[in-house]
Image (tube, rainbow, N blue to C red; front, side, top):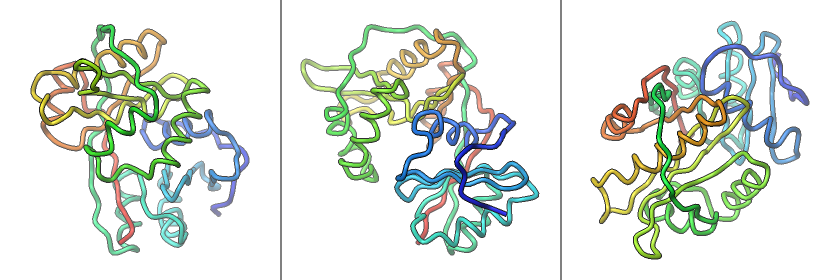
Length: 240
């Protein structure tokens, strides 16, 4: 049975959904705006602002998929391909599968700058049309930064940010880099690689595993050149 949880079960494995749920729990714990669910066989899910992250064990996959698909406030899902496919079938939606890459080479940090959350959002918004509304995004990033669960680096051209990257999740022992973007007039100069490499170097210095999820082949080639290796796949789906 899937039920609301005040504590997470012991989840074992090396998979990004598990780490994303753990990152939310370590950062926020039990708060009113974030729901955690668990199953009898060790499955778990987290729901924040309509976005669900699901770690489903094989015996509970169908039950978890049905449960998620029936929650009216859940509009998007990150999970393994089988669970996402089952939810998408209920929603009549498509599934996008993306690779998870883990950094397997030492990185070198550069002296890059940090943007404030407001500056970072202003830079990312025109590049990522699907970015969440400012207020919720800003509150989340500010909270995670204050509690040591989020960081960013950027390259400036004068006073203007032209490339940036951030950690979209941090947990004990690991972190996920995301929000990697470069202004259109500064692309193909290796700026994104500099940002990712600098973040990864700082995280490696803390003894963390570093992950990234490129959504196109060009980005995957850039990260592969830095020493990132595909270690898993995750799937995304959105309610139509």
